[in-house]
Image 1 (tube, rainbow, N blue to C red):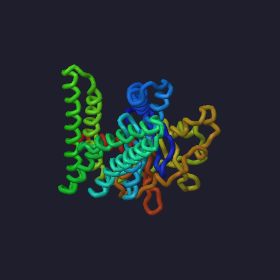
Image 2 (image 1 turned 135 degrees about the vertical axis):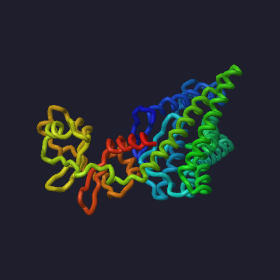
Image 3 (image 1 turned 90 degrees about the vertical axis):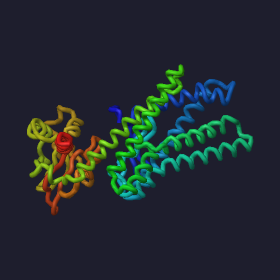
Image 4 (image 1 turned 180 degrees about the vertical axis):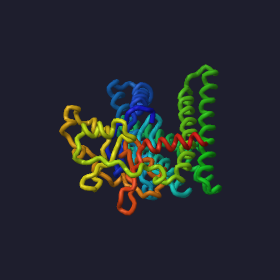
Length: 374
């Protein structure tokens, strides 16, 4: 999201979970604030190591709450038939990356509201645990963190319900406008403008704070810039998706597809296909049947000295389930599969026969052409 690498943690409910590098900054900030400010104030005269331990564990539980918030979006989206490619935690929270937009305003509303509702439920659980432990005479080091976790989850829910796209409240607003106008693009436009206005308001609050002699609201400026940028980008993305929705794969596919024989070496593959070729990945064929995909990244995983003896079949990806589509499938429907983390190519199959191939470079070329004519 910020041009920095992401760390893959694994899968929850079959959904890949990643942490953007920027997350570590905000985790350190939250943990250090708890360690140096919140817990020394709430629990005075304790050993420094106790504050450090409480700050680290509480911050970890809070970000676990964020994961559950995002997973709630993902589970509801998936229940409605949408494919979730991954959940990523980053600087200001997290994002569930959906393969497509919700199919109806009602589904959009349910997906959007699922996260804040989960945060409210978590806040209730933490608050109830805090009251129970406090009433039972448990040590304050046990129930004070729960009190904080209840407060921060309510704050998370309220912040996300602000009516500015792409916050959850902005998505609720988009669902309402979509219901009234029957037009997803128009709804996205107005919800995004609300997001930009909200971001501008945050920046104005920060500026007024600085003029008044306090820097307590500097984070408002950061959040405002972030929200404004995301809102504008979300609308541009929706514009592009709308344009690509009208373009079938058969219009941009390379046909006939250039096939790489399974028995050639990586050395031959590099010289005959990758160098000077149109694509960086090719279908691999063995006895007339496509058995996988080979790309430069996979080739580069093999030491250069072994290229003359390793065959294409040895390193080709054999999982073709995510790379096959029909000729009339729209380009926007396969965009997630053409991202860097995905297979990077779509095999266009018609009547059981390979009709052509669409790669990331084909879509980039189409996007440039579309942008030039807008």
